[in-house]
Image: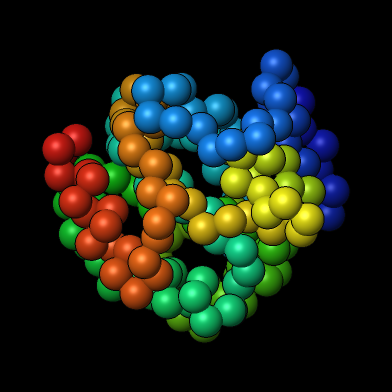
Length: 171
């Protein structure tokens, strides 16, 4: 894996991975990544291997109504999600500063990863056709790094309940 740090964002290049046209599917290994969270701290998928299941949720834009509802739903259900042995990681094309403001305004207790170049968004196959934004898709990744579920019909207002239903069999 090669990373080039530019200011407050990180460009992630994962060797051997091509951008997919469709989202990854259950049963596939989740592609590795490293990205900066809202605190400027690098977060890698490998940090959680063997330790935690991962709720990796992609969303279009900080502060928009649907994205705010989704983040607040996951915030409100965060303790129940943690109790299943999972962590939550959000991803959008917004930068670290935008994520810091968004997380601070809504008191989000989980990491939100900056992907301003759209590398992670493309790798997971969730890029909007024309825009450099992510579509609203959530991946449930188990402790071994395998994708166990993909939620493409996200209900932002109750996303925590959607996620919890998928995590219970993994805990």
